[in-house]
Length: 376
Image (cartoon, rainbow, N blue to C red; front, side, top):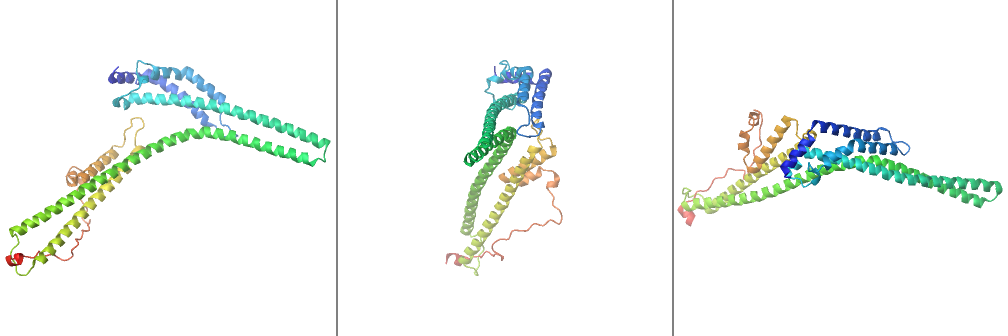
């Protein structure tokens, strides 16, 4: 059986009106049992009858759930029990529905095993409690007899009182342990779900942090290379201009003044380019933070049945944010702006931008050399 054939068979199995009706009825009665377990408030070390719950689970398994398990999970004709699913099968709705049925089946089995284990434990503790109570009663009887025959024997009386105190402490400890086991039974169900949710969130955050770190490393490396290439090109152009005599002759400036002016201009250019790079990098970092916030918010806007975000406007904002982030990485932010709606291309009339000031405050005049100044 190839993957496509198995996928079609699983889809016909799951999305069948009769099969879905049978599955709905079985899941409803199973969930009713779990709801009844939590409906009665915890009091005096117990909140439901173990025997009643086990009997109901057994009846559900025989009448409702065993046919569901045999039909959806165990039937070799549909191929789910064989495993080895392809990537297309893993994300198909039919495969995901069968996974849900498998998880519900495991939950039912685990719950039954847990209750049976607690029954055995509680039976042992109850027996120990009964033995302790019998010993206590026997000790109290002996104490009363001792008092009636020898009221002056204070030493034996204190010994008996100490035994009573010890046995009462043991009895209290057993009662507290029984109550603790009952509380753990309810808490473990919620702890398991909480750990799953936190695990998924931490995994997403870690992936995003790794992506940001890798992108930062790439951007830093590219920026350093571009700055070096730009600096080399500037020096080469300056040398070519000097060798061709592009500057008109002048008798008032020296070679040292020309070098100083060129040095200041190069520092201004490098400073302004570095500021431009920092502005681009900062804006890209902010966009990445916005993407992270949108990703977290999207979890609350996702339809649990389809796995899709149901708010179309929110999806459009996410797409625009991703497009701007990619354009900032590629240095094509102006081209990306042209493809956006008109309100992304205008600023209010009173909007002002603070200009970046260059390092050299005064206006720089490039000195002009004549042949005598240049060659001495």
